[in-house]
Amino acid sequence: MSETVEKPEQTGIIAKAKDFVTTIPYNKIGMKELLGYEKTPRNQLVALLTLIMLSMFLIGIITYFVEGHHAYNVSKEHPWGLLLAVYIFFVVSSTGLCIIGSLGDVFGFKDYMLISKRAIFGSIVTILAGFAVISVEIGHPITMLIYNVLTPGLSSAIWWMGTLYGAYLVFMIIEFVFLLKGDMKWAKRFGLSGLLVGLAAHSNLGSVFGFLNARPIANGVFYPTYFILTAFITGVFIAFIIMGFRYKLEFPEKVKTMLTGLAKIQALLISILIFFVTWKMFTDIYGGMPNRSEVAVHILGSWTFWAEVILAMLIPLFLILKDMGKSPVVLFWASLSGMVGVFFMRYNLVHDTQLKPLQMMKLKEYQPVPEWIHYFPSGTEMMISLGGLGLCIAMYYAGTKFFNLDEDENH
Image (cartoon, rainbow, N blue to C red; front, side, top):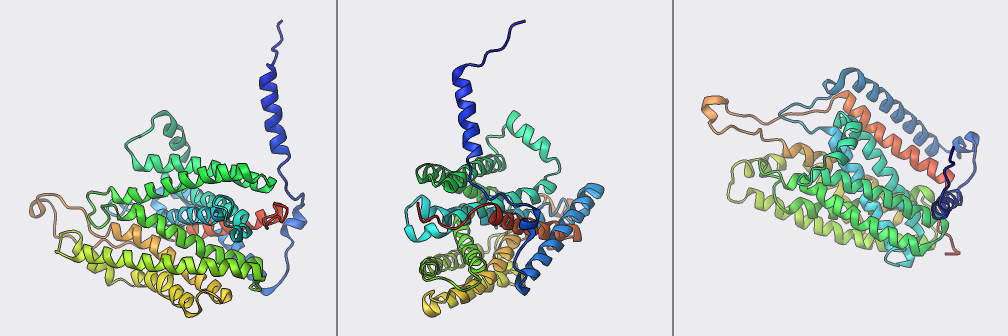
């Protein structure tokens, strides 16, 4: 019998790969250390809420496996529901954190190196949470992965979105590993690659809505650009929240400097967003275009739209401009408000697109006069969505235990 002899080149590659993986720095901790945290009222509350949300996620998943899509309140008239909105919420957050993390290790702004590792790890965690939520909306995620490779739909925006986000996740993980190792040269290369692919994936996600010719309220070039802008805004909100919890709202001077700079950037971004949204509504209403103007007027009369405007735009912008971002504690709370507003932003995006029912050409002959489509998420959708947030918090907490996410002064 002949023995298989490995080529030296193959052996060398395998050895290098093994050495690369085994030298990734991490903290060797047991279950006791993992579950050990400072027993302050705030920490106890966050831990309890996280445990409740994880339990809800498990219950929601079981309900879905038992009942299938009947567990959701979606229909053929309103096929996109809360889970899609929450998926968009998470992937927008991921792209935003990728942008924040790139300010330091890719673009070389030294003040922002403080948050690079936390932001990049956060981008990994949030996109994994998004994938977890959307996996029970797709129906057959394993089949999707198989045929995504075997029969690629090159003309499909959704195919490109999934493919690009998969590549983006790989780049983010590799960048994070190099950041842990302190190899800034390769971290920058993979960080730039991940940023470009992430922006492409995210604008492509916007095109999923922009390509809807049958939905005039969404169709056009607005959403691919809007998604990138709101991702950056979301990333800044999360940066304040992350650093607020890291330093227990007692920020060192170096962190204050960084957050003040981010606040000024945020003021500009929110101002641009208000400008964008204002002109979007004007152009939707002007001229009375059927299936667009009446939908825009209906949106203006909804409380969820004004929740988005007040919580994500007006309150944060007012508090930043009040002292030009020099009060990071105030802006921490403003960012919490902003993230609630961002959730409504994502929910409105999905729901408002489907407000107007699609019509047949011969209206009177085949179909009665349509009414607005009403949708409210089911309990299962809510549990899975909140569970996604719990999953995100739990993964990030575990990361703070296993990895050193603070800036390494030696690099």
